[in-house]
Image (cartoon, rainbow, N blue to C red; front, side, top):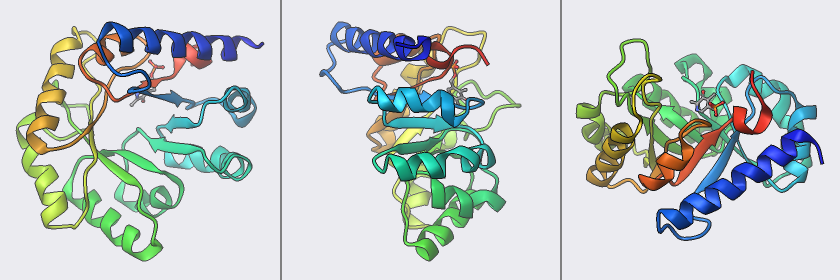
Length: 220
Ligand SMILES: *Cc1c(COP(=O)(O)O)cnc(C)c1O
């Protein structure tokens, strides 16, 4: 077994242990394997080991490797976890099954247009900038609940989840707790939070999916 596949199984085992520890149902947490910067040859063994849910942070990079892999493995679920430019909405709707980074009205309008045009409806999550970091994407926490309602009421788009990336230099727990609270207030069921360094903490705070890259594929 290759090193990547061993690391993949180790992460799966840690997720299962964290589910048990946090009194979560077994299988309640989806692993999104983040394959950015790695190519199809690196990704394929992880698919063959049983993984089906993957995350990429750039539309253009994903277009280079995923159409072929999705053809070979039709049950792959691909998540966009990086910022979406409105001029890439068409490509994103065509390729991704979940778009986790909806964070402004202009993007919502573009997505609504493409979803109607293509007859393809990826699940949508709203990214929340829980640390209000100026350089980071995401909607401000105080605006999140109203934004989710506007996506539904003004644009006819259901938001299924919230996503956050806590500030790198802070204890992530309070950020995960804030995201969970906002999701409850907004009536949203899915919580995408936790990366290689903190996914077990995120599971304790109620994550329904964790986005793990380097702990599986190695450093980038
Ligand atoms: C790269 C990335 C991850 C994975 O990060 P690791 O620390 O390598 O697990 C998760 N979420 C987002 C939004 C990312 O861009």
